[in-house]
Amino acid sequence: MPSSLALDSDQANQRWTAEFENVIAARYQDPDFSMAQIAGALAMSERNLQRKCRQYFGVTVTAYVTQKRLSDAATRLQHGHAVADVAEACGYRDPAYFSQRFKSYFGVSPSHYRRATTDVTVADIDD
Image (cartoon, rainbow, N blue to C red; front, side):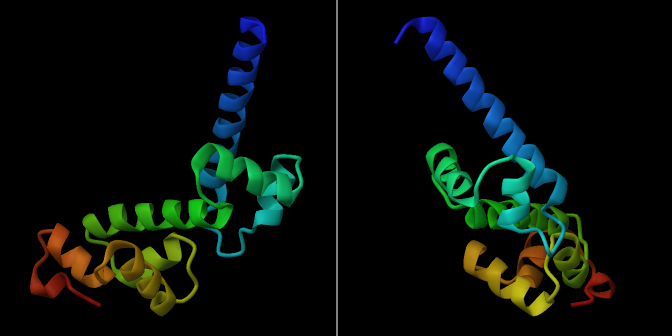
């Protein structure tokens, strides 16, 4: 393949990954955000979306969105936000389900993570 075609392909790949990341960043906080919506925003089938996500990021679309949500949740917890507020802000309707996913991903509960990573007084702990 001529080098100009390889360069065009690399640029197209970078453009797609940036577009994908922008779509996720704009909507991951919506609990109703779905793979169908992502595929629609990127004008592709769900199957092709799943294939490209695995190809470029090494994970499924669901895993990518979950990682984004939980990463954001960890940051919010470090800033001392309440667990229920963090769950809602990161796209989880049920704080108990959020806590389960968070503990599965990080190995500690969100409230423990929050206490371990912030300078919080007893009066500030509301979970």
